[in-house]
Amino acid sequence: MAQDLLAAADKYALERLKVMCEEALCSQLSVENAVEIFTLADLHSAHQLKTQALDFINYHVSDILETSGWQSLVATYPELVAEAYGSLARVPCPLLGPPCKRLKKT
Amino acid sequence: MAQDLLAAADKYALERLKVMCEEALCSQLSVENAVEIFTLADLHSAHQLKTQALDFINYHVSDILETSGWQSLVATYPELVAEAYGSLARVPCPLLGPPCKRLKKT
Image (cartoon, rainbow over all chains, first blue to last red; front, side, top):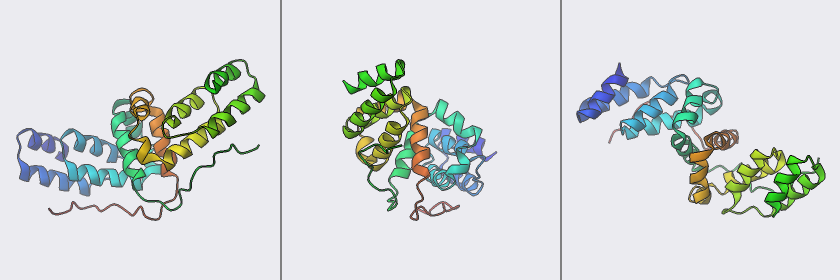
């Protein structure tokens, strides 16, 4: 229900209701619905919810990649996949070393 | 030239030539051509080159995201963007903390 309400709140510029919907959806984030909520937040310019959904996706990525929602995202909204990649890439990671410029010998 | 040769080597199953082309392309990896080489390696099943190109992209991601090649990849081969995301996500990163389940108050 919060998803439909968010759409309506965005459409009619009901900011207080929109924030309430964002909070409700944020508290409901799960592996199964994170991609859908991420897409919905993008569609309705729910920036904080979008950021939280993206953080959730990045943190649970190995499980998220197995979901049908993720496959659907790749097929339908590749620019959101690219955004997820960009956001993950911005996390400073000391374990990501420079690539080798020679192929491994087999 | 190595790009055309790789295509031919793959087409005619010339494994030694294919390895030589992979090595040559790997040594030429740059911000400007990494996405193109990644795509090419995928197209011609050049697995080691593909891995190296992907490592290069992940390491130079902030520059790569600015290239026209990346924009083209997102539009044309979203599944490769998803693969890049998956590969980056598999790098264990201690700085990626669990997401907050509450929105920040503004």
